[in-house]
Image (cartoon, rainbow over all chains, first blue to last red; front, side, top):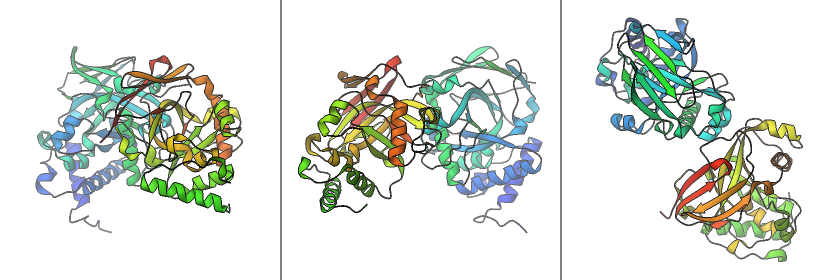
Length: 267
Length: 244
């Protein structure tokens, strides 16, 4: 049966274009320039694109939250974050605190430091708070996230990045820490080194005031879509500072207070 | 439960006081209302509102004796009562603040659950603030009156850090930089026993519910400014209270 356009937009065709851009590393003109998309339609495109990835054998292993800093929200003229899916094919496991990532996988990648949550208990009830999230969290880890945009020159509006799987590129994780659950995550400091130089300073409060508040937003947003956070889900809770553009050969090292550093090299 | 004429009158009195945002005078023991009826009134007044958890009150034996009861009381915490800073005081009738300890459950707890089951059901501990809001003039009330009035439940806030075990030591409350109340957490009794009691009283607790364990310190009238609750280990909860 042919797919029905949602509200006059051919969701399936747009998802296919994004998938081609992902596969061929060829950016698209901003979707918002040619289509009058609502946020709901943009999430429908994202969801359809995830279906295409799954059909190619990929797997959803969690979610990422984007647009968590006030500065970025103001820049895009929005007052809430967005989210995307973590596709397993772009999870780069660390070995000995380091990982090499092929630079040619990306269109125009940038690198961020943040905290990842490992969900231990389902969050299925609406109205989840940051405290509910902490109580439902199994462990927390430092994470380097690669953001990437299939939209040319990152000329994104909200609907562009939502459809584009919240500009997901890939990620790596430090060791899961149960101790971090009992740290005041607002005041956790982060230093992201770029080729050996400390380049970005960040703090937990940069993600919606508290990283667990961002996860609570996600939990409630997913419930509105009939999905929920479940045990084993990984959640990237949002960057704690500005992103740094990546060039092949670059080395990024993330230090988060009390955690072993993680290094990512683009080869 | 079939409510007596006195109980129905009490229910109506509280309902109207809340709706009109005004206090009413206690009638003390002149009212023939049992504690069981008071809980039924509490349930009736909260009907249809989603329950986020429960609060405990009247923990000290001295207070209980004064009220003529032999166990604590509990109240319902509705989802709408979970607040974040800043807190607007205009939503309350006569707000008072108390420093408290709270827990969020990560597993259900059946009535009569053993202490070990209660401990296993706690997902995490937090410092908390209980903003009391009684309809009873000057917080003078009988046990039945306070229980019927949802045990003075008003608003609730939690700290930003999850504690891995219930702390031991002093809880202090500062308002605009001045120490207003402090108390020893030991006076709350055994917290797992309290949880078990609450599970029995309420017919069982659910995962995700938040429990406020009552205050070890005296309640302080709220005023606009900065409220700080400081716990053992220097944990701190900071709340702005605002007169719009």
